[in-house]
Length: 277
Ligand code: A2P
Image (cartoon, rainbow, N blue to C red; front, side, top):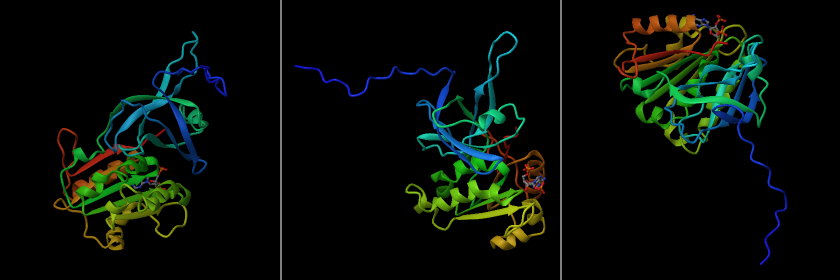
């Protein structure tokens, strides 16, 4: 019996040089300030849609030549059932991490600590009829996960996602994702006509201009959507954006009678800060 000769010589297995290394499988640049990417998912990682993990790269060597991981909290933008993990990131020119992370390419390794946490999860809010997702900028990321999570549509009659950005181009990641949901084999049917999308811009002309907070205060957002203003009986909310936005919206939601929930104490709304540098 002769042994089959392999056509190509087996390459030596390349061991990860980073702790908790994952391999980049896709990178897409949406604007000069925004990009998304996908990485392999550690087999042991279980998470709830909406949670975040620490990811990053190895830092520059210090005076003694020692390197430490440079990590930041990133919402997982993919749903819990996805085979890979997706992230949506800003590019800050002098940001310690993103100035380097923005240059990753398919095949590169990043560090991913497999310890998911976060409050933007279904477990932290009480049952209701209508679920609001309020996002600014990259605060869309946890909702990119939750919008692809079947439970979102199983638990609510109506889901409204608002996304406020400075410019139209910054809406593209979310707009494309939402446009594709209806054709998604897993949740397309579940969604039916439950999902409403309300994108607004503040510094470039678009069909709907203004901060969502102002549009709610004036009643315009509710009129546009044809829904009654938010109330504690029916409405639940998840908020993710810049700090000023989170504070302002939190006050407004409290004004409507909603109370802030947590994993250990679910209530009517939850808030989390979007990634900043
Ligand atoms: P504006 O252009 O009026 O500041 P950023 O890129 O700075 O994080 O902002 C993202 C979006 O969030 C922008 O459209 C910005 O509007 C809006 N924004 C910033 N602060 C608030 C706030 N306190 N309430 C509502 N929207 C806000």
